[in-house]
Length: 383
Ligand SMILES: Cc1ncc(COP(=O)(O)O)c(C=O)c1O
Image (cartoon, rainbow, N blue to C red; front, side):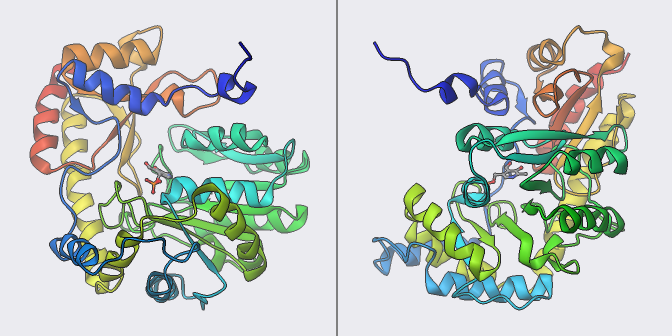
């Protein structure tokens, strides 16, 4: 038999989704995979039913239905403060997952280098395996998850084609300050590098932290591919709606990659989500406020259990230090925790460059009742 491709042997199964299966196996509360355990707004569900009834069953325009691009452009303009032309600056994708893949394939040829921070969201390395790009990792140093400007510069000096920036960050919950972003921007300018942002948690940010869209920094609009999704903002991770925003020159190329990868996101859902994009600003404030409550519930239990963690500034993840438990590996600890404590985490090593196994990641995109139930179990971790 011929062999399957080399890239399939390099790819490993997602640890996050594996931990979801482990959670089911041990009847553990799943704080591994990040998705909300509540329904999206009722108006949105109704809009999806209406779109089905209205016969929106065939392909939409490949780069996104005009109604969706129009509503999204208005929303992006409102939050980013940049003019966004729905006809030339956007491509609608199947979630941020496809948006990131499209962005990487649009700017990189096989063998070219992409810089990214470690810890990172696990899909980025898979994007590079699939596209043939080579990762160059720059550490974010725990527990504050700050970068060392000298280490960042070294990565750029090594010849990057692009830099991937996840902000707010999964898994470490950092919201990069304007000053930090300006340092990245200066290097991108000096070394003439594209910046691919993943901003899926743009609306899940906790005061006093503020999200700064990288594309809004001086000179950055022309070299930034801003990727995001409606998945987290409207609690519709299963609808698979995301987008890339960039200059018309870049988007013209990205649309081709997207077309041949997937043709397009589900047409009736593209139509329906316009309803959500027209929600008032108070919707977004409410979302962040609800997540702040969930965060405080979980962190309260971590405090009671005497666990050290890094307080998230954004996103719905928290990195917890497990080094004092004395396990040889975070993977072993995570399986033990799912089985014996009844709460499934993600072993932190799946987000880091090799060598870091002192952390687990928990997510709090769960109803307070779920978090209280998980929290009661976590108290058993107290010495
Ligand atoms: C940082 C980050 N990017 C992308 C995704 C995937 O987004 P989507 O479901 O829209 O493809 C996730 C999901 O957890 C994420 O955390």
